[in-house]
Length: 171
Image 1: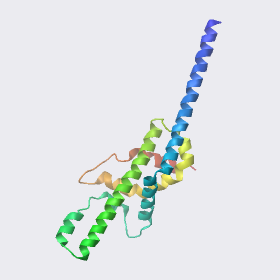
Image 2 (image 1 turned 90 degrees about the vertical axis):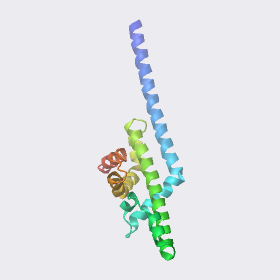
Image 3 (image 1 turned 180 degrees about the vertical axis):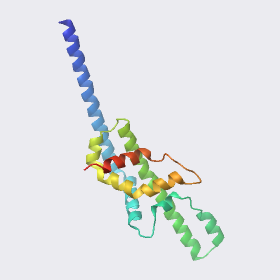
Image 4 (image 1 turned 90 degrees about the horizontal axis):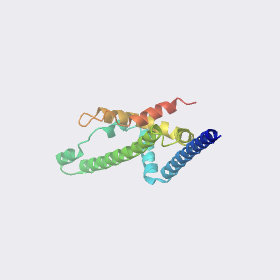
C-alpha cells in the first residue's frame, strides 16, 4: 500500500509539474505576442519593410550593403547633389535600423520556440502570416548581410529563416 501511495503521489506531482510548465509556456507566449503588438518600434519597422517591398525603385538588398555616403558627400562639396546624398544616407540608415530591429525580434521568437520557451502552435495561430511575409520581404537582405564582403555574417537570422520556411509549408 505504501508503494502504491508513493507511485500515485509521484505520478500526480509529475502531472502537476508538467501542466504548470505548459501554463508558464503559454503565458510567456501570450506576453510575447501582446508585448510585440504594443511595441511601436516593431510596428513601425514592419511598416518600413512593407514600404520598401512596395517601392518599385528600391531593392531591399541595398540596405545589406555598406554605403559610403560620407565619401560621396565630401566629393560633391555642396549643392543639390549633397542634399540628395544626405537624404539617401538618412533613408539607408533608417532602413538598416528598422530591418535589424525587426529581424532581431523574429530571431528571438524563433530561438524561443527552439528552446521550448514559447508555444509554437500559439505563435502559428497568432503570427504565421506576418512572420512568413516578413521573411519573404527580407530574404534578400538576410542573404545580402550573410554575403557582405566587408563583414560577413554567415549565420545571421538562421533560426528565423528555418522557422519561416517551416511555417510557409503549413496549409
